[in-house]
Structures are given as C-alpha cells and as structure tokens.
Image 1 (cartoon, rainbow, N blue to C red):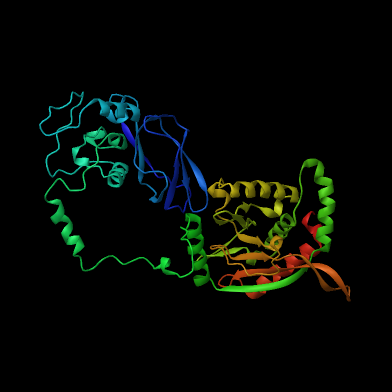
Image 2: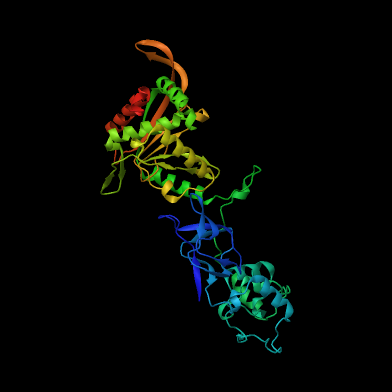
Length: 428
C-alpha cells in the first residue's frame, strides 16, 4: 500500500519551508531512519528522516522549491507487497519500457500490460503529478498523449523521459479561442515593484527564508514593543586580568574563555538577581522565569541566529565556553536543532569585536530585554578619585517597557556592571 510523505513541522512555529535537496530518487529502497531530504526552515537547514519503510514511488515537490506548506505531500512511498505496481518500478526501468513501445495513437492497439489503463476520453482531466506538469510545461510536452505509470494512470516524471515535444501550433482548434479571454482581461494582475528600474547598476538578490523571518519579526518588534534604552560604561580591567589567569589554568583542558563567555555569565547572574527583568509580556499576563536562559546573537551567512545557553546561573565559565563554541560552530553550519535556538529569557548581542563603540539592539520577542555590548577600549576614566587610563566598554540594555519599568532595568544594568567590574562573583 502506497503512503504519502508530507512536509514536516521541524519546529513548533514552522508553517512552511524550502525543500533544499533530495537525497533519494525514484526506485530507491528507504528504511526507517534514513535521511531523505534537507529542508530549510527560517532558521536552519535540517535533515528529514524516514519513519517508514518502502520504495520511492514518486517525488511530488522538486528540490529547491520554496514556500512548501507544512502538511503538503512531497513524495510517495510504496510499501511491501506493492512491487508489481507500475508506480513502484524504478525510474530507469520505466524509461526503458517507454523506449521499447511506440507512442500511443487512437488507432493503435493497447500495449500488453498486467493492469491495463483505459484510454483517455477527449476532454477528460489529465492526471499528472505537480512535478510532471512543471516539467511538461517547461519542455513543451503534451501530456494528453502520454499513458501514466503511476497509481490510477497518473503521469509521473519518469513517463516524460522520451515523450515528444509538441509543435508550436496547437493540435486542438479550441486552444486559440481558449486563450483569447485572458488577453482581453481588463483587470490584469498588479505588476511587481519596479526594482529593476533603478538607474544604478545592480542585481536583485532573493531573500532567504531566514532573512524574511528576521525582517518580519524585527519590524513587528519595533512596531509593537515600546523600547526603553539604558546605557552605562563598564570597566573591564579586572575581568581581563581574571580571564588571563583562568585561561592559564584551563589550557591543559583545551578550554579558552572569551570575554563574551564571561559577559554571558554576568548577564545570567544579573537576571537572577533582578527577576523583574527576567520576564515575557503576554498581553493580559506576564511570564516570570525562574532561571536565566541567555540567547546569544551569532552572525551566519544568511542572517542572524540566537543559540541559547540554558540555566546560565548554575553553569561554570568553562561549561558556558564549551557550549557556546559548539553552538556557534553548528549555527554557522545551519545544523542547530529547534530547541537550541527557540526560547530563551533574554538576549546578548556583542559587536565589540567589530570595533563598534555602542549600539541599541532590537528586542527579540517574546523576550523582555536584550543587552548590547560595545568594544572595550582605553579611555580616560576616574579610578579611586583620580583620572587614569582604563579599558572601558559601553553596554546598552533594551527593555520592553510594557513589562519592565525603567527602575528595574536600571537595577539590572547596575548589577551587570558590578559583576563585570568585580568578576570574582562570576566564579564563586
């Protein structure tokens, strides 16, 4: 018995995806657990594994197809006992059979088949897979003269291997009148935006699914979330000294702490110390989180993704560093699992390594805040009542003012500053 493979929901919020690549072909034997395709979601490219066994009978969605809705049938497998069905025969076998028999005509006798399919009556709807229709339209193949080998006479891709292309003049006299009304339609579809009319030489770059999602979510955030921004300067000298000492002791374990690892820990502890900022606005209610899960912004080729370090307050700096290294590597490869980048109670975005002195980050809903970290640089700074040169960075917290008052946001910023400037609290 044949059964359908449908576009899976690879995350709780996924509504559609791009079928990036097929790893199977018609006629392949598939076992449970075999990777069948790579599917691009709005955040990552993930592998689609088979949950049943069978032979690939038909591929209904071509690789590279975008906007495939969750639940759409993308392929069909033939189960055990279906080997005799024409649709379960591998593509090479069907192609060979097509070469051996002449093109069917109205006067020709039916070819000997184990399960003959009735001749198509003039005007009868042609049954063909979406992929077969797409190929036929692009190649100028007339499907009305082809006998399908799929279930119930359905025309599939393999049936088009040796199909003749139709002439430019339509064979049926009714074809020309049928197209006339479309040409005279007084209400044509609206033209696309005239992006190609710009006088400067350019190329049009199609947005990836990730970039479309980023654009939508950040637009919604700025339109719907009232942001309040709080900035302060933080002295880094003590933290940099401690980092050097810790890395000397961790070298034998292959661990090297970054400043970002220590800032993640500082934000997690600050959120636990000021729980009024570790919240999510939910309309008539608000979620108050009991632990700090920090989402960390990572730049990837197609945009930005925020892998999560969970329960930051209870983890050692070495554990945070190891996890962040693994998550960052897999984020750039597009191999994160949904649970590794969906959720989080607050975010941290560090552009200091790029030399950016200060910036204001956009909140990532439904989170209530995000910390933006600027570059550490030597500046004139008052130390113990005297002017000195210190390594200082600017940190800016963006807070959802619906859920977090300015005073609470200021308390979080103060706690973050104290933890960074007295960093022994990060290892206590």
